[in-house]
Image 1 (tube, rainbow, N blue to C red):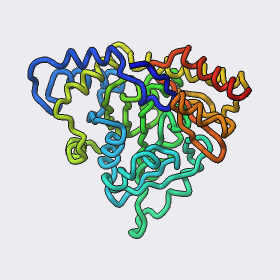
Image 2: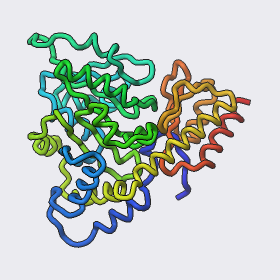
Image 3: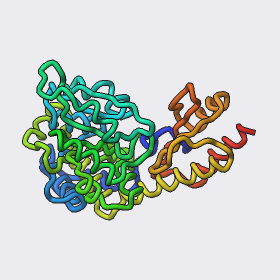
Image 4: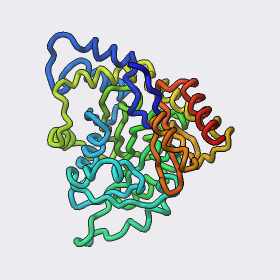
Length: 342
């Protein structure tokens, strides 16, 4: 099959060869199911090595599953989750948090996909009033759906507000690796110094076949995590294949290599587009680029390069670089846009 270049999503890319090799290597013999196997044990060890021993972990199949399991674990059905209106849990999970976790989402308008204490404060009301859903979680995407990244100080400001009101801070980390690379910090620094209580640790967008991890840190109740995961249909029977992938990604730093490459390709793309006169609408801090194009050139370009229109009224499009995006792929897209503009 001919390789098709797509800038629509980092979900469009295939599986990293080292991850695929790990899956094949795990596919031999019999081991106990549901995570009681050496591959899962090894993967948990690697997660604790980079995130700390004081965590509880539950592997899931996908990002929506990780978010739902997390929110159902740390919230009760009459509680609410404050998030950006562009958040994946609000826009792209088909109301799964509401239906399955039973929480109320409180979306907040933001200019760049990032919450701030000032944006959150008006929604910290109704405590103890039985007619109102009770605020329980502030949820942020790191990196955000606009490709912007919270600094550790920005996370700390939000966690301070959350903790002062008895709330928890959740990070939807579908692109957590991209954010870690962008900030040049360790994941432990981001989580602990940022005051994060719960993390959905992404793998699929970063070169894995499938698999995410629910990570609960200090302050987050973990005693029901295993039961919630099972009830939400996210407990893999042949979990060794999820564990093997995480080990392949984490053991020698592959997860940061793939993220760094994707980020670099996005930076290259943004620079190339700016060079041909395209307006870049958001800071390029991870692996996503947002730009405005004339409406008439978008359909043929989107057909060829597989990207999505983010805001039709504005003509804003989104380009996403992946672990396997090449400089030639980027330059081909830039040249196509230049030719279309001319």
